[in-house]
Length: 479
Ligand SMILES: Cc1cc2nc3c(=O)[nH]c(=O)nc-3n(C[C@H](O)[C@H](O)[C@H](O)COP(=O)(O)OP(=O)(O)OC[C@H]3O[C@@H](n4cnc5c(N)ncnc54)[C@H](O)[C@@H]3O)c2cc1C
Ligand code: FES
Ligand code: FES
Image 1 (cartoon, rainbow, N blue to C red):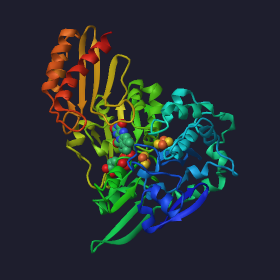
Image 2 (spheres, protein in one colour):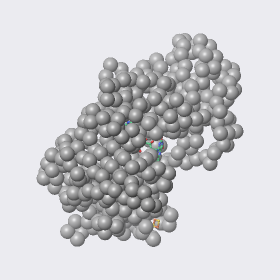
Image 3 (tube, rainbow, N blue to C red):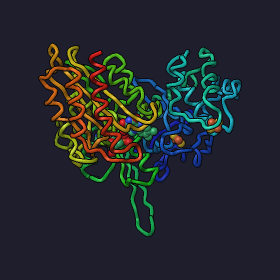
Image 4 (cartoon, rainbow, N blue to C red):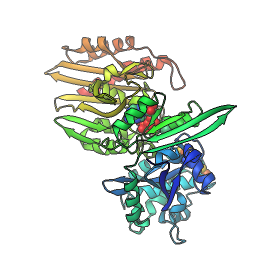
C-alpha cells in the first residue's frame, strides 16, 4: 500500500501526498511548482488554455496525448508523465511549433498561446505531416479571442515535422517507465483532515489495483465518487456543485481497456477513452464514428470514457441513443460478482440508475449492425464542434423488401432520460417505408416525448425537431 502518488512532470519525479493531491493539476502546476505557462481561463474544459500532454503507459510504452489540466485533479495522475509548455523547449531551443507561432504571428495577447502550442505539439505525436484537417481537428479544443485562427493554423502547417522530436524522444523513458510500472501494482490510500466552518472533514482518496478491491472500497464508502476521466465530475467540482469527500480512482484497474469485436459483438472496456473508440469505429462503425468526430475536443476525448458518459446519465449524453437502439448491455461488477444489465433497464429516472452502492461499470457490449440493418445517428447542437447537444436521435431499422421488419427509435434531450418511441415504432413496423408513413410517424413521434425549455432550446423547437429528424432519416435511407 502506498500513501503517495507518483507523477513525473517534464521528466522530473514527484511523490505527492496529503492535501496537495486534492487540487486541479493546473493549480498545482501554477501555485506549487511555479509552472505558470499553463493558463486557466474557463476551468471547465472548454477553452484549452490549460492544455498539457499526458504520457500514459500503454502496451509497454509511454503514449502522449493532450488533456485539460483544469479538469484533471492531481490524484488522477498517479503513474503518469505530464509535459507542460515549459517542457517543450530543449537546451534553450524553442520547440519547432513555438518557433512557427512566432514566425507566423500566431499570438497577440498570448493568453491562449501556451495551450495552442501544446496542442500543436500533440499533433506531431501522431504524425510528422498533419493535414489541414488534422490541424483543425487537433485544435478544436483551443479558443483564441484575439489573434484569429488563420495565422495559428498556418503556423501549425508550416512546421517541418521531420524536425520535431516526439515526447518519447525528448524525455528518454526507460527508467521512468520502469518506475511507473513498478508502482502500478501497489494500491494507494491517502487522507487528510481539514476544518470547514468549524467542522472537521476527512478527505479520502483510494486508487485500487483490482476490481474486487474497488468494489469492496465502494461498499465500505457508499458515498464515494468513482472517477475515470473526470471530464464530468471535475467540471461539477470546479463549479462548486459537488465536493466529494471520498474519491476512488479507476486509473490503475487492470483489464478494463478491452476494445474488440467478438462473435459480432463490440466490447468496450470501462477505461477505453473516446479517442481510442473513435479510432476503432472509423472502420468498424462509421455511423457512430460520425458522432464521435464532433463529440467534445481531443483534450476531452483523450481521457473521457463511455462508462463515465453512461454513469453520469445526462439525457443528452451523445452515446445513449446509439446504445439504446443497438440494445447495448452494461456489465456491472459488485462484491458478489458481475451481472449484465440491458441499457433499457439501467435508468430509473433523471440521473438515477440501477448501479448498487458497491458496483461499478466494467464493460459495455452491443451487437454490431449487420449489412441488412441500418443504423443512423443524429446530434443537433448550436455549434458543430465541441458543443453540448440540444437533441439527439438514434434509428435502427431492418427491412424486408419494401416493408420495415423491425425499427427502434430513441430520442435524447426530450425528457428526463433518453426515450424510445414505442407507438411510432409499432406503427412503422410491418408497414411500407414510404413518404406517407414517414410523415404520419413523424407527427406521432412528437406526441411521445415530453421536452422542456432550457438554455439550449425551447420545448417547441425540440418537438419540431422530433418530427424533422424522422423525416430526415426517411430521406437519408430512401435516397
Ligand atoms: C468541454 C466538454 C465537452 C463535452 N462534450 C461532450 C459531448 O459532446 N457529448 C457528451 O455526451 N458528453 C460531453 N461531455 C461530457 C463528458 O466528457 C462525457 O460524459 C464523458 O464521457 C465522461 O466520462 P469520464 O470518464 O470523464 O467520466 P467521469 O467524469 O470520470 O465520471 C462521470 C460519472 O461517471 C461515474 N463513473 C465513471 N466511470 C465509472 C465506472 N466505470 N463505473 C461506474 N461509474 C463510473 C463517475 O462516478 C461519475 O458519476 C463534455 C464535457 C466537457 C467538459
Ligand atoms: S482553462 Fe479552459 S479548458 Fe482549462
Ligand atoms: S492571442 Fe489573445 S486569446 Fe489568443
